[in-house]
Image 1 (cartoon, rainbow, N blue to C red):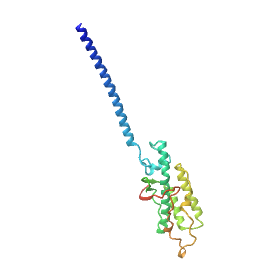
Image 2 (tube, rainbow, N blue to C red):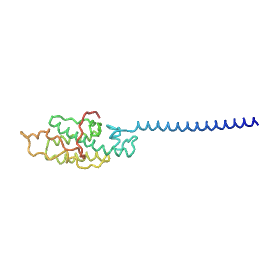
Image 3 (spheres, rainbow, N blue to C red):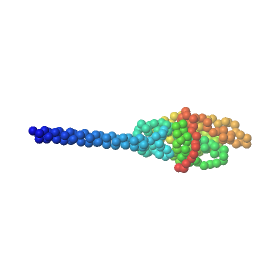
Image 4 (cartoon, helix red, strand yellow):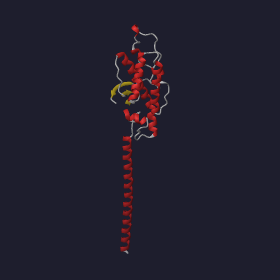
Amino acid sequence: MTTFVLLGLMTLVILVLAALVIYLADRFNILERETRDLIRKLQDAQARPTGPYAGLTGKALWDAVTGLETGKLDELTLDGVRKRYRLLLSDHIQWVFNQGVSDVAKGYDGVPNNARTLRTPQAQVESWLPPEAVAEIYRCGQGYAVGDPAALPGLAQRLDEVCNQLHVQCSLEPGQPASQLLMPPRPTAQGAGGAPPNADALQITAGAVNSPVAAAKPVASSGE
């Protein structure tokens, strides 16, 4: 009788131990899965782009908003970047145009680099534009500073065309024509000796192209 009791107790102990082992193994597997999930979430959080332009800058930012190379950005994030990019694009256009205006006063002729670091209300970021677009906007600024009345309508059309094309490439509505903001009516009178008015007075102080926000301040420049 005693033997049967001992066998029963041993069997019960073995069953309890087996259940305990199974339970601990299951808990271990759950903890392992939770740990892997936590590590993956931490890695995703570190890899997730931050800032108003999702961590993008320069040509990589241009490629993203134009759809050439969006990287790992989802559509919702890209849409937000594109909406904020309007301000950066407008400020860059304005800066290049004003550079053409001011260079006339200095007697200098040199298309600026197509990459420019600008400070916006949200961040400091490098803006990149196609070199041919930068050259066209710059020449329009020079032509406006020279002030030939016969040439102004053609300059305004060229400026609007290149700026509209840049907006279309970025899937943005062009909005108000750039010429209306950057090329206000010129004074009819010329300075002494037939020279055009001081080009310093032609520096644009209106808001950025297609944007109600004040223009960004360039803080540095970089190459193509």
